[in-house]
Length: 482
Image (cartoon, rainbow, N blue to C red; front, side, top):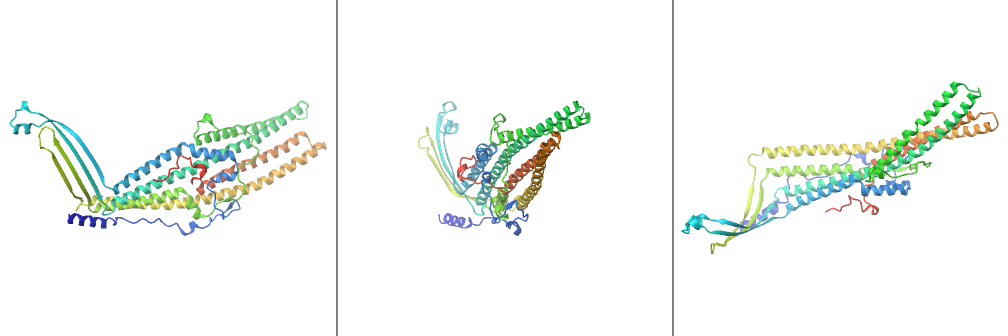
């Protein structure tokens, strides 16, 4: 008993000595946590973006669609199942901290010919026997060198990485739902402008055809205005297709069949977009929000823990076991038997440790790869944010000039109207001036579409939308940690 107690104390003392490196999260590059290098009037670096950034658009329909997508999206349902599986694996690994028990019970039926022969009986006189069996086995691995604790550490980091992957998917679902909605509305606005352009072109054709019938216009003039009308009509089908495609994309994001795609007003004159400086915060906030950065860091933590698991293979593995068994024969009186066993079991691959050292080398290489992946993820996150800021700033600067062009075209059209009423300008020239206004307005609407798309891209790169607000508690990935 003294020796067993001493062994237990020694095991408890060594249990804290986990093999392998103790993980420390890697530091970000110094400049990565400061303000973004791309300065722009389109963004507000002093304010962090809200998590539910789509509410900045103040569009109840959009907010409802994003909420529905976060609840019903099929990819998020799969992510929730993957997270549940990862947490179950973590619980399985955590069970290694405690003794493993096994209870066995059973009954055997047959003939014991040897016992009958010793009793003086013949083969034909052998008697049927019933034997009741029972056993209780207990095994506990002493975590001398941290194999169990490192296994738990790796499993927990894996579960955290799976959760981060699900959070990244929430970011994508929220962003792509917003993008599909804004694309559908923007296409509706551009479609209304294109149809007005078709109407003006058809009116011009009628005027020139009447002039040609009266001898005031040539066949060349007729062909020219008809070509313009065909060009105007050619703008309509792509916009109709783009709008339909956006609604179908929105349906799938909402977890609906294409036949259940949402319906939106076909003509929408209101520009879609925030059109104010977007709150973006700084690099530190970006890296804290981005789920892919957190996922890469958790993968690195798991890889570091697996170095410890591999290193523990160099050392002995000690398991304390205890067993109590019972057997009773129903025929042979007084044949009850009890067995009791207790003691340590030591296993050690020594001196041949080539396999263990190869596994350590594998774990070291995997950890180095995970660190490189983490560094690359950080750099990619910063690059994407900077690029999104530049793209938004560029398109907003372009829109300023397009808005000025639209204003001048509208002014020219108003002046043409005055000249037409005074009799110094033909109706065809007035329609040409109006066509210029429509063309400028179409270019401005297309720019608004690109701005809305750039805004969504920027918010997506900022990593918002994965935190679960009270309004989204019924999201399928909202599972508390075990």
